[in-house]
Length: 412
Image (tube, rainbow, N blue to C red; front, side):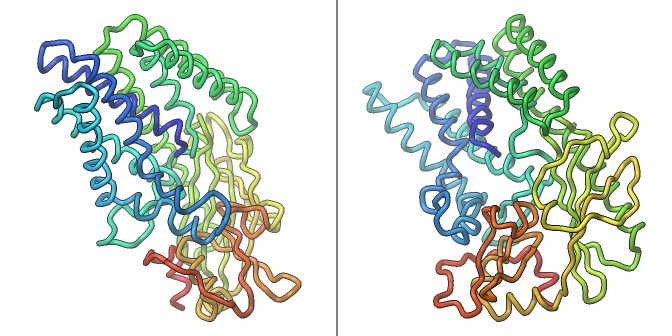
């Protein structure tokens, strides 16, 4: 999930905590608690992305793939990070106020930072990128396959309440600009349908009115409820899309083994999604891309927008489309070729600890360009595209123990 959304989640959780604290104590929380809660919760909601400081943004691609959303995106490390942040926040409080925070304030702050840090893992899980929530017990990638990496509905339901609750004009301006930018992009980006952009704009107006009418406690609860409801609706749409793609894939080839289905709903649109199926038919490994509609009576799959990712690298699909599933492209290769590549090349094996939908092609010097169909598919432009030389000079270092997502292909 993008860091703007993580930040909004942290601020919203801080506001909810302040309102709950006021209700239970029947007294207005101190301005210092408000400030410390807001700042520390915003940091906590982004804390797991501290791995970016050592993974980098564009240097070593394998290191980035394996360590971003790696150890820091596990429950055990996230809880440890929240406890450390709470300790730092209490030290800062003592230094600024010349006294320690009250015991009840410290407890509320601890609970807030734990929830805010874990909210980062929950939000990242909803995407198709993946996290390792249960390391070191479980080294598998976990995918929610339900929410687009930037979901404007989460901005619409949260920003108006945060603007109304803020006591800083700078914060109000920044938050308002975020919402305005989100709505502007919704109208201008092709991924967002016109109807979805109109619904977003209408929703923004309604939540602005609610933020002005409701009292602070009701305002915070309404925003959190809107966030949860929006997420559940998108989750439901993704689940229906997955079921439709599963049926369509099995109807196309009932003898093939369906290994995986990657679902990525379009932003602001719980009806439409892009799908990649991962299949094995005997000795052949095959992927297929499609647009899927969870409600074809509202919008048929063929009318859904598409994400231009790997279409130029694969052949047009010969599969029969339906109102629910519009097949777009196919790509296949021998299963043995992938297994041999990973078995005989340590660079390929390291990359396969992240790659969920592998695609590859041979280069002029007999090296192999290996990539993930979720993010470009060996097109040369994807951040997962890794050049695998015939004879590596050195193997990647500090490779984590993640179970390869396609271990079902590599083991054979």
